[in-house]
Each structure stands twice: as structure tokens, then as C-alpha cells.
Image (cartoon, rainbow, N blue to C red; front, side, top):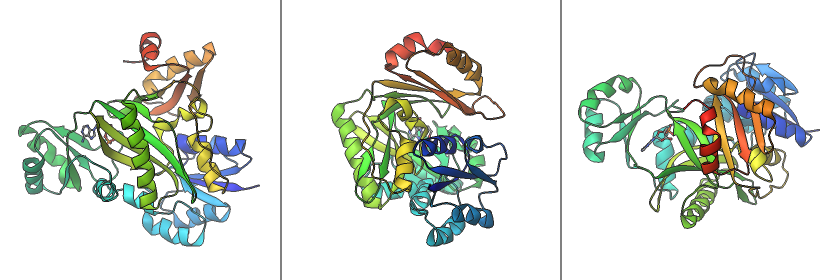
Amino acid sequence: MKTIGIIGGGQLGLMIAEQAHLLGVRAVALDPAPDAPAFRVCDDHIVAAYNDAEALERLCRQCDAVTYEFENVPGDILIPLSEKYNIPQGYKPLYDSQDRLREKSNAREHGLQTPRFAAVDDEASLRTAVRELGLPAVLKTRTLGYDGHGQMVLKSGADIERALPLLTVPCILEEFIPFDSEASIVMVADRERVVSFPVGRNIHRDGILDLSIVPAAADPEVLERMKLQSERFMRACGYEGILAIEYFIRGREIYFNEMAPRPHNSGHYTIEGCTTNQFRELVRYLIGEPLQEPQLVAPTVMKNILGQDLEAAREVEKENREGVYVHIYGKTESRPKRKMGHITFVGMTGETYEKEWADRFVR
Ligand code: AMP
């Protein structure tokens, strides 16, 4: 029996472990929190910090292959480990995505269009960047930002003053894209092929993903181009394993926003909405099984359940309706804006969700 290791024990680790079990594979997770959600379903776990080299080595020693669901694993630990153990995705896709400046430069170098951007380190470089890119523009910290944390939209000159406190760390200023919609794609690649999941339209609220609607209602040519350019990009960068890319769509233009070399929140719909899912294909990649091309089963909507919606989600779960799949991650502490679960509605369009379901959750 094969064993996979997961650096990180959040909901992504939980769902990787669930799919591993369905494939007859054991799973071990490492996380600093003793009550990490993935620990409930893993065969074994290690409570340790992500920079605890000895603990990470212990994880690698007991696994046939190791992956990460946590993006900020430090390179000075992961690189030596990947030379000794089987961490097939390696450090490169993490390295390329850990810093927004590097991430966007890398996307551009490998053929993707990005919003125009400039590095910003202090007031002078911020003012120069604003002159170059114009306003509105989005200021983001280069590292450790997520779900809209560590960013600010600058609309007028007066906002420059307000933005100065962010500049205690290196930042990036990006042109603001007045997009028609946001979309994302999840791909899994091995040496032979890249398989990709149908593109979903993503709706964010307060910088956090709220809904994924699949298929994305966009021009089919634009969606096809997004798929082809994403697969080409993954190959050109030499990445293997899993990669998610988030885009802005404006008219016929596609702008790269960010990427993550791990399962993605917008891909949770694939568990029931597709013939195979992002977690399962990642596990198949890790254990060296051939990848399967996914097909969409039916139009699908995924609703993220944050702390404020947890009670409503439990009510939906009790109703046990056909095509409605409630996932509660079992986090011990519920907080507003914390991702506590998700619900997948298979056989539902965005319009039907809006009419029949949206009012059941906090607006
Ligand atoms: P991020 O953390 O970079 O994904 O940003 C969070 C959200 O902020 C995105 O999903 C967009 O809704 C919005 N956003 C970020 N960057 C831009 C941009 N350059 N133009 C317009 N909206 C943006």
C-alpha cells in the first residue's frame, strides 16, 4: 500500500486524504495545529511547524511521495528535502508563486498577459508607479497575501498617503482591470499529459471566493484560449502535479492574476460535478498512475461556507436534497470570513442558484 505525505492539514489536505483513501492510498499530514481538519481522516499525522526541518524529514521518510497544500513552505527546507526524497512537484512552482512580482514576471515570460505592474518599496517608487500605471490601481504586498489580505485599491492621489503604512514590506502596484468576470482553471500534469478541469466563473466577496459557477458563462473562444494557453504555460514552465490559475476576463482579453501549485478552492466543485476531481488526479499523479481527462457531469454551482453561513449550511445538510452536497470541514473554531465548508449543487445554473438558494445565506 502506498503512502502520500501532505505538508499542511487544512481542508485541502482533508480532501486530498479522502480521495487518497478511495484510491487505496494512505495519507499522512503535517500541520502546526493539533486540531488540523485533515488529521481526522489521515492515517497518521505530525504536529510541527512548517519550518521544522526534522519533522518534515520524518514525514518524507514515511511516505512514497510528498505534496503541499500550504503555499509558504520555505525553500531552504524544501529544496534539500526534494533532493533526498520524492517530492515530485519540487520547489520551483512554489518559488515562482510565493512572490507576486516574481509570479507575474514569470507568467509574462511564459506567454501570459498580466495587468501592467511595478515593484514598489517606498513612497518614491509608489509615486513613480502611480504615474506610470495611472489610477485606479491595486497595491498588494509581494508575499504572504491571500483572500484580499494585504491589498488596497488606490482610486485617487489622496489614497497614496493612506497606502503608506502597507509599505513596511515590499509591494507591487498593479493596473486595475475593470473585468467582466473572474475565472480559474485547475490542471494536473505528469510527464505525458496535462489534463484540465472545466473553467469556472468565480464570484468573490470581500476578496474571498464566494461562488464558482461552471461552466463559466463567457465566450467559448475565450474559454478555449484560456485552456490552451494555461496548458502551454504549465508545460513551458516545466511544472508537474497540480496548478490552478486565476484570470480576469475583460471583453476578449484574458489577464493572469495569480496561480497556486495546489488544489484550489474554485476546484472543489469537481468532487461531485466532474467524472474525476482535482484531489483524485493529484493523488494519481503522486503515485504514478495515468491521469484521467475530466468531464463535467452537469452545470454546477459551488458555494463557499464561511463562519457566518455555517448554521444555514447545517440546515441544508439536514434536508438531504438530491444533487446538493454539503461539506463541513470540522474546524474546531468558527469565525466570520473563515472557510468552514462548501456546498456543491450539481445540475444547477447560476441563475437558479440566485433565484432559489442565494437568500438562504448571508448577503
Ligand atoms: P488576489 O489576492 O490578487 O487574487 O486579489 C483578490 C481579488 O481582488 C481578486 O479576486 C479581484 O477580485 C480583485 N483584484 C485583484 N487584483 C486586481 C486588479 N489588478 N484589477 C482588478 N481587480 C483586482
